[in-house]
Every structure is written in C-alpha cells, then in structure tokens.
Figure 1 (cartoon, rainbow over the protein chains, first blue to last red):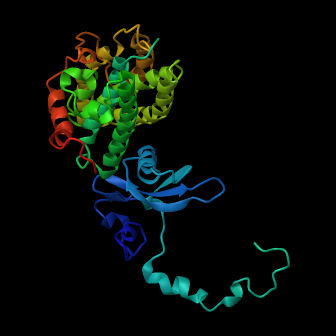
Figure 2: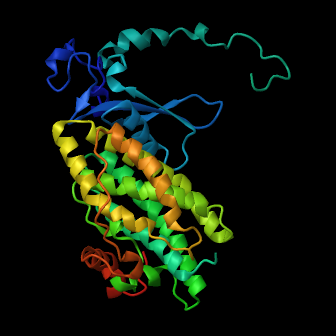
Length: 124
Length: 241
C-alpha cells in the first residue's frame, strides 16, 4: 500500500474510528502536519472528464484550489480543477480486493464481444 | 508620452528585485505548496523583468542586454522602488509587500496595456493577467492572517503598518511616464482598503513616506540583495547553464 492510499479513510484502516487518529478531529478532514489533505482532479480540456492527478495540503478549499492551480496546471494541463477533501473520499480497501474485483474476472459475457459490429461503424 | 530607458528600468527593476526577494522563500516557505506558489509568482515577475530590461537595453542602444542590466549595474543604477527591496521579514510581511505591489502593478499594467508604445503595451498585457493572480494570492492570505488567530492578526497588522509608508513612493508623480503613477493611487486604495477592512486590519494613517528608489537612492538592503544575485555573473562573466 502506498503512503498516499494510507491517508484515505477506509483504505486499510482496519476498522479504526476517526477518533483513534489524534491528528484528525472526528469527521474532520485528514491532516498531515498542519493542513488537511485534498485530492485534485483536473479536466485536460472541454469534453473530457476530470481525472485524478494527485493530492496536496491546504488550510481550506479556496487555497486548495489555488495550490492545485500552482502545482498541477503549471504546464497548461487543464481548463478546470476540482479539489475534494481527502477525508470525504470513501475508498475500497486493499484487503477487500479479492471480494471486490476477482469475481469479475471470469464473466466474459459482460464484455460486448458477442455480436458483429455493423459495417460502417468503425469507432463503435 | 515617449517611453524612456528610465521608465522601463523602473518597471523592470521592480519586477526583478521582487522576483529575487520572493525567490528567497524557495525551500523556506511554511508549506511545500506555498513554496511553489511563491516560486511561481517570482518567476512571473522575472519573466516580466526580462522583457522590460531587454527592451530597456535596446532602447538605450549601448549594447547592454538583459544580463548586463541585471548583473552588471550597482545599486545606484537601479530604479526599483524601496518596497520591493525590503527584506522578506516573516510571512505576513512578505504578504503585505506582495499585496501592495500587486495592487499597484495591476492598475499600472492595465493602463500600460493600452498605451501607445505597442511593445510596452504587449508586455503589460501579459503581466497584467499574472499580477491579477498575485493579488488574489496576497489577498487570500491577508484575509486569513488578519482575521485568523490573535497572533496572526497581530503579525499581519504589524506587517501592514511596517510596509504602508513605502507605498507612497509608488505613486510619485511623473508626468513624463507612459502612465503617470500619481493617477493610480485611487485604484490602489480601492483594491487595498476593502481587503484590510475584511481582514479586520486597521488601514495605517498616511505620514512618513520614504522614497528615493526611482533616483537610485536605496536602502542598505538592496546592496546585499544585489551581491547575492550578481556574484555568479560577476565571478564568471557570461556564464551559462
């Protein structure tokens, strides 16, 4: 598990409650040092979805947005930014990987491969 | 009005010295994120300085390029305002300096972007957008520090009180300049006063107004800044990366 995943609640917390973490007030944002952690999503251009690009620390949402601008759009990477408190993200746990994801492995019928692609629809 | 070398040096040296001061925060800012924010702002200022000094060198016609102007002049030849050469102090002082500088540069560059000198107007048009962001950054921090804890309020008020006198020099009349700075003070106050009020800070009274930077009469701080900025170039003239 990466350091990054460990900061997400539910990512291998092993059932700890927020109050176990003295650096984080109950229901408050995840903290590291002084400032809470934020996850950053950037939309590269119009028509595309926002993608997760990384995380950062900021005292509040307004400054998180600006820090994201400075950290993740220095080279014209995007036209829109979302910042989300890391603590607001519920993540799947690596411990649950088998139960979550393995059952999909042998269900080939979920892939749309059982019919002919019509003529003249190359990008379907 | 016709653009002169001195006008370009005043603009360029403000930007250059501000960039050098802000660069001192690199690896020393309170948080990594702020480190990068200040470095970005410093590089914006440096970018403007390079264009302005290059233009100044060409207008002068004595064969001096941006490097010759940045690295081979002594303090008496610099035309920057005193405000930018003042030491960074604590983070509050740095934010007060940035707030006042940006609140001056924003209306200045906005006016210059419409001036008759097309080259200067183009430089100002680019810098104006960057400075709008600098102002935003300084404003947000001034609000948070001023309206934060008792200690942050005390420090921010003390920073504003310390830097305020140096803002008067920015608006010294110069009817020969492409944009007379005297006409910008009303816009400066219209930006700064609401920020101070919202940050629960007292707007200092106008009084003592140190000046001299535009004539090359600087505080003792500039020599030290220049020594650090220029030492490499002077030790190894023409050194390149």
